[in-house]
Amino acid sequence: MNSKRLTALRPTLEESRIAIGLSATLLSLFLAYSTYMFFFWKLPPSMQLEPIKVPEFFRYPEDAIPFPETLDPARFPAGPTRDAYNFAKQNPGLLVQQPCYCALNHFHSLLHCFTTTEAATCANCISEALMVQRLDREGKSPSDIRAAIIREFTPDRVRDTRELTHP
Image 1 (cartoon, rainbow, N blue to C red):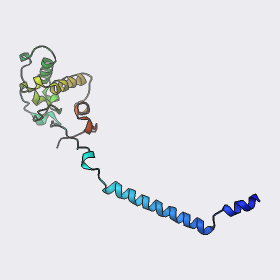
Image 2 (image 1 turned 30 degrees about the horizontal axis):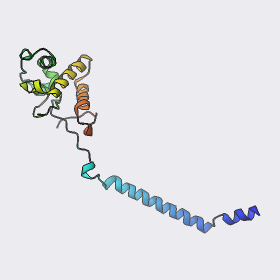
Image 3 (image 1 turned 90 degrees about the horizontal axis):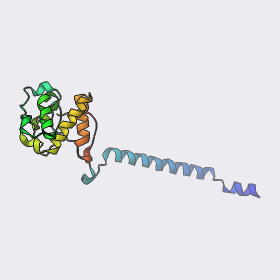
Image 4 (image 1 turned 45 degrees about the vertical axis):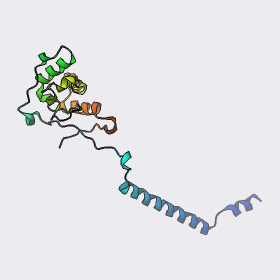
């Protein structure tokens, strides 16, 4: 009795062909829809990430010569601000290769922030300069330092650690 029962539950050849055809059709539709979505569908503007905007910098220090004159560090009280201005005065070729994420963002590089008193009141300028100093002492290259600045100071929404170039 068990063998008759098993025989009765087996699909016929015609039923098998229908099931296989239906499965193949559904798979084809799924692949076509997935391909369409991959190439043509876009996120709504409110969900799209903004393109990475890196402030200006010079890739090669030679492109910035003559370097702008930085303010005399002695104008500032001892502490991080004076240290940052001092480092900027001693290392213009390194700072000119770094972007600055200060609120003003109208300069050509981190070095340019130290040509005025603006950097003295900007936590980003001072923090970035001291970070450059620390990483330079660790033997990092200017491009490695730039990548670290971008990683540290770019807003969270647009973080990217690829080597970025300025047009």
